[in-house]
Image (cartoon, rainbow over all chains, first blue to last red; front, side, top):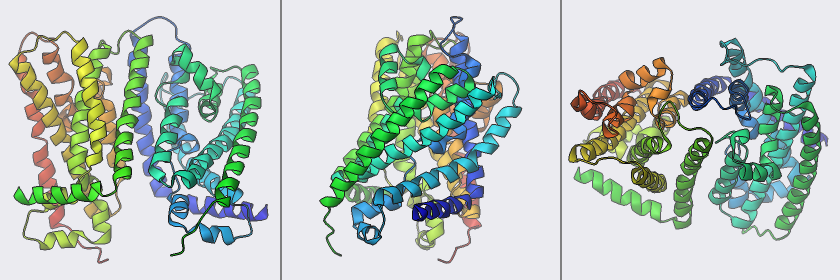
Length: 267
Length: 260
């Protein structure tokens, strides 16, 4: 356990070095947030029928999405691991007396955490200072805030477990491009990045609720915005934990099978 | 020009060597933007219009911008990834040759896989035109053509400015994505739906508006007077390339090799 923890710490500190890049990134993210807000505002202005999520709640979700992007986008990838698998350097990794799944998992989660922690604060600070209705406000009660933090962390754990499946699938396909493509497409669509989950048609929403993707981003952000009540949030935490167990089991099993059949062809 | 086609031939051959990878990239280029359109379509199931524009009108705007963007990325990718040339010092090699630097940078990259993005945009274009009741005239067809051509040139201009920055910063700047990717994301809707400041900036500074809502108002018969001016706006947008080339040439003069 100590080995994984120190790797986690090294990677976290390593990630914190890129402060200027993070600031530039935050600026870009801020601009994207604004585009999305203006588009949705124009859509909301076209009708007076009440929507399943109010414009202000949606704006809060959009700011949180931009701030915590590194916590839930699947296109953020680690090329080192892909190279290890496709080029055979994995032999070195296998020499280490550690569990490869946990080793990579610690590395990946540290990367996302450092990226996310560096970027979220500048965006959130500006978002708090904006005038209504473009601003971000604190949740209505402390309990929602605590539930937001819990679901966000559990969501990150789920997401990294999903991304592990993506890397493991490369063992079988030997082609990084294809696996990455399918995972990032599904992730983007089913997590509500393209169209917010509450605005989806009924059938699509049912599918989205069955899949794990929305539990990484949509759930915590809507709890914060007050669109999901505390009771539903508590039930969702149980679902999140179930997903973590399922994804871990599949990942470890898949990895074990892949490593059993692995052939490293010298060179 | 002849030399450019030679570059292209070599690059296409190079890309087709890795066929599976190429096909997957093209498929990705098809689906990644396509789910954006699916998102727009689903939003219109819930909302009647966006800033007064209907689904099919937005689809037309989307298609034109994505066609222009995919073609400019296909040919202008050399400028988009230019900072790597500065870092590794390969730009010195370009300077040594007795040909224009712009032509040679164009020739460094050719992203044929962007055909996927182009294809999805053409599908959306057909879908939009099929559903819109436009009285097609020669003038309107020409305007549409001009919108696409002008769009390609504007995006290439943006890539060139981004590349020029690399002469000073050496690293590529993520911020320039605001204008290339951000501009594309924004201009896939008619710009009138945005805040006044943004609309003016993207009409008068980076003239994406001239391939977006201005000529569209003529194509969709939303203006009655001064039609001619609306029709000609895409041509004004093309002028954007002139300052871009000037800035580029200025940058080349100031170039100091990194020595690596």
